[in-house]
Amino acid sequence: MARLTTLFFLLALALGVSCTSKYISSLELQLQVRKGLRLISTEEGSDPIWKTEDEILQLKRDHTPFVDVTDVYSTWRKLPGSRSASRLSQADKIICAFKDHDPEPQYQNELAPILANVSIPEMERNLQKLTSFNNRWFMSTSGVEASNWVYSRVQEIVDGFDRPDVTVTLFDHTWPQGSIIARIDGESDGPLTILGSHLDSVNQQDSMRGRAPGADDDGSGVVNVMEVLRSLLAAEFKPETPVEFHWYAAEEAGLRGSTEIATKYKAQGLEVQAFMQMDMTAYFKPGTEEVIALLPDYVDSDLNEYVKTLITEYNRIPWAMEEPCGYSCSDHFSWDMHDYPTVFPFEAVTGDYNPRMHTTDDTAQLRGFSWEHSLEFAKLAVAFVYELSASAEWRSR
Ligand SMILES: *[C@@H]1O[C@H](CO)[C@@H](O)[C@H](O)[C@H]1NC(C)=O
Ligand SMILES: [Zn+2]
Image (cartoon, rainbow, N blue to C red; front, side):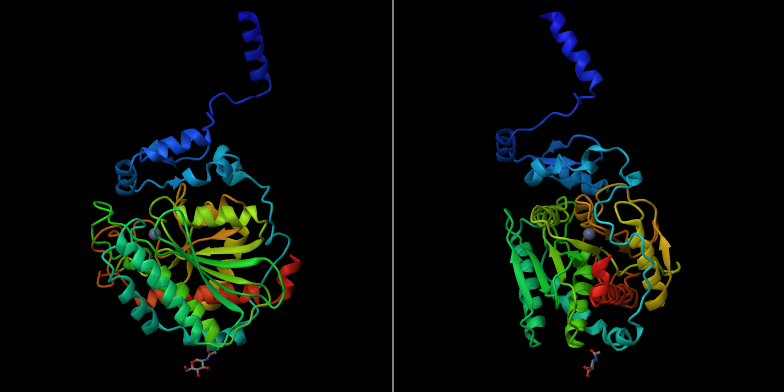
């Protein structure tokens, strides 16, 4: 018996069977969730860990990136990124939308009048309302009210135009706060172009009751995406391939909204040609050079190269490469984990971005908050959506 066990052990070793990863049954998941625990991943290649709500808030205070995989555990544990130690070097992305191609910006004439109409006052008005909710935590009453307001505001924007090809949906999750999805159908079918942002906010001392205006994080991205949608509809833009605009719930609680949505899209076999995340676009440290900082990790490097050409063509400020973020820093991560090509232009490089995020001081009055800066990100996103979805040519890549 003992010898047989040894033999089996040696065989397992020889076959490379991993003995370190412990599978969590759905029964155990349910029991732990009932105890108030969440399954949290903070590191690539390691098993997720059960954490209490307090421990999760401590991760926020420590600026430790994490993703809550509780609700998607059965899918998530099979993803290569959750097991492999060096995903950055992994060269086998399934969707190679930007490979073997040297795309150039090509709609300068069409984009010029649209970019000129991207409006700071519109964004300012939307942000004023958005920051008036006490906080936008995914479990708080005001967090639900804020999500409902985003839903009605986006619907109102769309209602301003005669566009039966545009729909607005409230995406229900298993928690109170919903995500919002607006979609412009393509003239024909084809892979999606998605702009993402997160509508929740957090006070890292007291998530349920604390004041969390979240003007920059991520009110800026929320109103950027609203304004991109409005500008494109005002210009009567009709894409060749479909475009979606996402405002996620529960990003601050571990990318929960985007994780659920990306998992669902993957399960449905939906193709996404490009995903851009807008999270914190309005602050840069006074006195430093204004840039659009591009994240190098958990993104598609070819898409990054392409976005550099868009910035050079359409923005008044240059791009700069940011340091690796390390792990699950924003909602693009949820899409990257499912092998969709993502890009994440961020307000500034390390040391120069908003030091007051997740506090009561993340307001539009903070010194360093700049609408002119945020406008550049909205313009970049307009160009990104237009260039990628306007032509059928993109579909053949
Ligand atoms: C820009 O805004 C003006 C004034 O609202 C409008 O007349 C014009 O059609 C807009 N142009 C585009 C391309 O959206
Ligand atoms: Zn954020």
